[in-house]
Structures are given as structure tokens and as C-alpha cells.
Image (cartoon, helix red, strand yellow):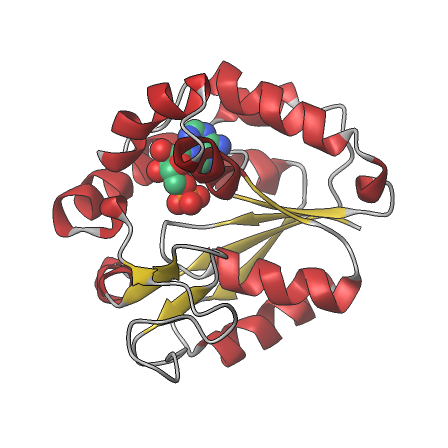
Length: 207
Ligand code: AMP
């Protein structure tokens, strides 16, 4: 099954996609994670993308399109995949229109819920596992349960960048809801509950 998770930053796409990937046995493909890997490794792409990402702006379409097309050709995507954070513009969606998408799960919540949730998010600097200081708490404060890596707040999870990311989402990404509605692929999911509640709804949406 080929699934797209759509929704504003911080709504929990990454957490839900990780669980869904385990449950369905198909890869979780997150352009944000791929870009952050490039930033960490200081590749040419990473160096260029970093300042845009830190400010909450999108990186150019051609960069992510190339990345995603390459990834989707991998053998492990033959039985399906979960796209998280891609497409983010109509142009990106058009670029993959020849790839069959079965469901687009549109996760929604109010700006207040999103801002609150993002400000409580911490990410392992080593393995990338996502924590939430209330809902997905690490056992030892500041350290990852899985690999003991140090937990950080993403630069773009800080207040100024969050505002920008929400603005960019409304302008550039939200039009995708109608785009996929017209193709009869959208299933709406309430993302304002706990991570467990959200995952149950996402699972139901793709079942
Ligand atoms: P995310 O982890 O999905 O919130 O993405 C973090 C940042 O990576 C975004 O704010 C953008 O700067 C960049 N990014 C991730 N996916 C895309 C995309 N599909 N198109 C453009 N920029 C992206």
C-alpha cells in the first residue's frame, strides 16, 4: 500500500509513520529526516539546505524530488511505502503523479495544539527517535531510551521558525488537500489526541 501522510508540522506524522511502518512492514520515507542526515554529514546538499530548514522555509522542489524519486526506486518500496513530509507543494505532487498513491491521510489539529506540541518535542541527536515531554517521555531526562544519545530541540522547533513553518504549510502545502480530494484519496484524521489515539485513527484510515 502506498500511503501519503499529510498535515502541518508537529502534528505527529513522523511518530505515526514510524509505528505504521512497523505494523505494515513497509518503509517510512521522510524527506525531513533525509535532509537532516545530509545536514549532519555536511554534504553539499546539507550545507545548502540547513539555513532554509533552520528558518522554517522549504528547500527547493528539485532537490527533494530527486531525492524521493531515487528512494522510491529501491526494492524495499516494491510492496508499498509511507511518505512523510512529501509532497509539500502541488509541483512536488505533480512530479510523482505517475506513482500510484492508495491513500492520503490528512491529519489535522488547531494551531494552538500544534505550537504546544512542537515546543514539547525533543529528538535524539543520534538515532532520531522523537520524544514528547508529556506523552513520549524519555526514562532519563535529556537522554534517549534506545541509544543513550542526547536529546535536542530542533532549531526549527523554536518559536520563530514554528510560526514560519505554519505559514509555509498554509500557503504551499494545504492546497494539496483539495488536490488529493479531487482524486478521491483523502481520509481526514483528528490529530489533537494522544500519540496512541492518533495512531489508532491513522491505522483505521488506511485499513
Ligand atoms: P520535517 O521534518 O518534515 O518537518 O521537515 C523539516 C524541514 O525540511 C522543512 O521545514 C523543510 O525545510 C525541509 N523539507 C522537508 N521535506 C520537504 C519537502 N518535501 N519540500 C521542501 N522542503 C522540505
